[in-house]
Length: 384
Image 1 (cartoon, one colour):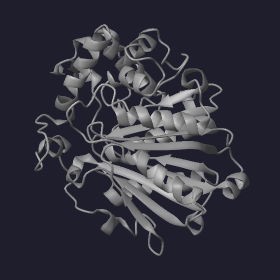
Image 2 (tube, one colour; image 1 turned 90 degrees about the horizontal axis):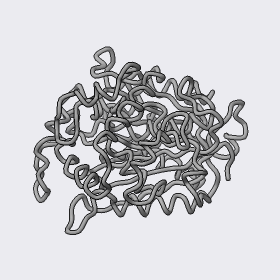
Image 3 (cartoon, one colour; image 1 turned 90 degrees about the vertical axis):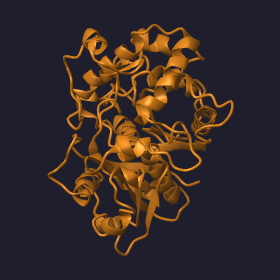
């Protein structure tokens, strides 16, 4: 495999409703910022990869058809990717694979969601043939998994609120974040309404409009860049059915195996000491300790102890979601790419007020489809 690097990133302002732009305008806002950040232009882009969550989220079937021109795809290859909520991460991996395989020199990856165009809760609650019913959106689906985690690990009930406070305060440092709550407290989170026991209102991600784009280049393009780049050290993806007899929803096998493959490919032997910042897909606060264990940062049943000890704060041993993460901005189709882009921003030293001091190696992580799809990458200041 050839070497590849993130040359630049761009993201929109994330809000509940971006009525000031169309879907095309939302995408172009992120694309234009990514091209400028990479100090490049359309003449140097060889292909476009588009990521998008289920079309039901906007009620527009195959939006790539009418978006092709706005995405700059006219006269270029355009690929559409879909792996449910993980699609943003998968989009970055597909784009990087085209570069690492030597097919293209520079590829633009773009992912978006404009949830205000439709009703994602409704879209997540329908029952397609031959699938298990969800009934109450993503929160209703994941709440039993969180209860199972609490029962198995013995985690105290305030751990979820601790994550919510940390992420929302981090989000206050991110000018693009949808939710910015510098004054949020443990007590205010615990006093917020219970939505799906044990998930409270303030322990839940928002519904956002937004987009993210990254420009990925080959070694020649990376070495020609006048600004620091984020070298893609390794990528990994794994899949398993959403539901089957014996599936472990607390510690999904696909996520576990993807992480081990990722660490091996990146030469990481001790993730907790070798990763300087982690952008982990945490749509509900309790997923931070769960995924810390699934990713191998902690042994099973021990992840909550890292959170409770403050080790996942900006000044902790492993800063998790310094951008505020999905808890602060959740344009579903773009949320995974945002995790990947924010990881790249950390090692490029371009994360602004939520920059982790001295970050040299970072993780971007995404999952989707009810813990069916997992995608992740490790980026660093050097190729290896």
